Amino acid sequence: MKKQGPKNLPNKRNPFSFLLIIALLGAGLALFFQPEGSIFKKEDVENIPISQLLQKYRANELEKIVIDDQTITAKTIDGENVVSIRELSSNIKDLGLNDPEIETIVEIKDTASSKFWVNLLIGAAPFLLLIMFLVFLSKRAGNMGGESGPFSFGKSRAKTYDKTKHKTSFEDIAGAEEAKEEVFEIVDFLKHPKKYHKSGAKIPKGILLVGPPGTGKTLIARAIAGEASVPFFSVSGSEFVEMFVGVGASRVRDLFKTAKKNAPAIIFIDEIDAIGKQRGSGSGGGHDEREQTLNQILTEMDGFEPDASVIVLAATNRPDVLDKALLRPGRFDRRVHIDLPDMNAREKILAVHSKNKHLEKNVDLKKISSKTVGFSGADLENVMNEAAISSVKQRKKDIAQDDIDNAVEKVSLGPARKSRRINKKERNIIAHHEVGHAISGHFTKNCEPVHKISIISRGGALGVTWFLPTEDTYLNSEQKMKDEMVSLHGGRVAERLIFGQTTTGASNDLERITNIARSMIMTYGMGDEKQLGPVVFHKKSRGFSGIEIESEKEFSENTARLIDKNVQILVQEAEDTSTKILKTNLQLLKTISKDLLEKENISQKEFLAYFEKKS
Image (cartoon, rainbow, N blue to C red; front, side, top):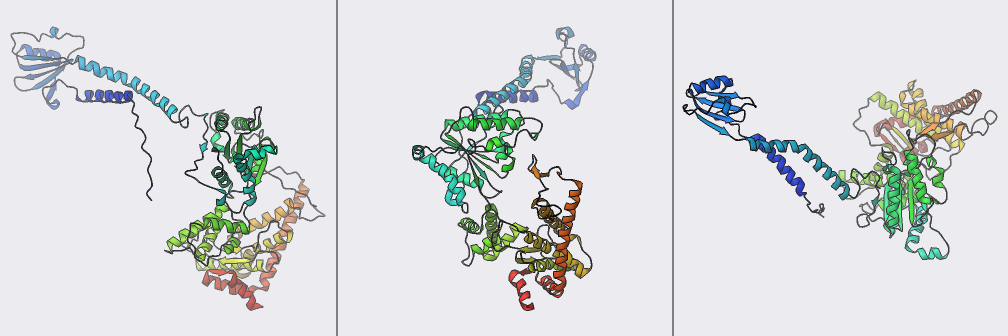
């Protein structure tokens, strides 16, 4: 199918601009080609004073004289060329070049009229250019619909959804059944308002879509636009913010004014946290432009003159920073949570993104969904796209299971860096480090099963031990977090047992261990009950940029020492457990590491086979 180009627009030329360009070109050509009044080449000219030229004239030594304004050029009888410049105030007759007894031919050129027009054009050109520029600005401001003109700062940047170009329906959304049911009521109300009015029901004025990035908030909004039979205006929260004070509030007024003219209508504000942050926190950058914009939104949604014919949709992944006045009933009456998909939802999402792809018959989407715990809808779409790209690179007709498995690893861990050269000694250390993680985690009761061990560098990691849960879980127990710390200690402990020292490769492991231990003590109240008790010591708040900022300590120095002591005890207990496990299975550690150096990858089935042989 050939791609259609842009349609031919009417060619509107301004005759005034056309004439101005012709005039300027004429002035330039006149300057370039104006006559010089010379009867010979410039390089053959000898400059002489006017008195000397007159002396030669009276001596009848000149053959011809040409007078062109101030320039007087002459040719002597001997064939020499001379030129002189007369004073501007002197008269040609006063020079005495009209003696009838002298045979010299005197020619006077009249260039005053031509120079007058040239000078007029040169003098008027700047004013004509200024007029032309002002006409251009005024026409652009009028013809561009107020979108990009110089006087359109206060105009809304909202885009109207075009169903002919983008057709999205609820069938294109999988895994968010509760969210679809919540927003489908909006579409149904707009299509059949009478059945709701009979029962006295009122449609919510605002619906806030809340969820992590990539879970499909904007996709649901597009589906509403595709299903609804009313105008749909889409705008990002950042488009209200401008360097000029008052512009954001003006754009809000213009947006709601346009929506009310086309009522009933839907307004969708994406990333509303860009303008809806809590007021009075000093996070406005030194001025109240953001607060003015937020105040205008509050007024338009539920002010002195409320309008129920305009429904506002908004999406954010940071609901904790939004102003309370924005979240109260009457403005955003309904909050729709869109969480990360569970295993069944992931399988449905994979099926949606596989519709236009050719898969082999043995591809098991359920198996893939079990490997993608914690993936969002956007991640799953990316997995299927990477699998399709991989199959094309290998010149396959259909996408195989291996292509999808490799795509899952690429999306979650990063691309394989096979070009990275690692010497034999470091490869040996990496192999024992990764196997140490796997064995330590395997012999704990609550750690997730080992899915894969690899010493192929991916992203910033030199190797990886991949633990995958068998099912979705939403709670973490105290013992599970302790077992996770044991598995994280396994790499560093294995290095010390085999090589007698540790390396910098365990820095990220230690960081994660410390964070888990501190969260257990300070956030979850899992410390020594006699010393600390079930108290939360760790509070965080979000700054203007959304980054979590630790608040000021609300406990004494003695309590801080107890916290540090409890954290150290948890970390040390996990290290001791990991050391005990690896010392008991030292020979198994060496055997698996040796095989890993040869294979580079060990699957879950191959890993479990070592323990079956041992038993």
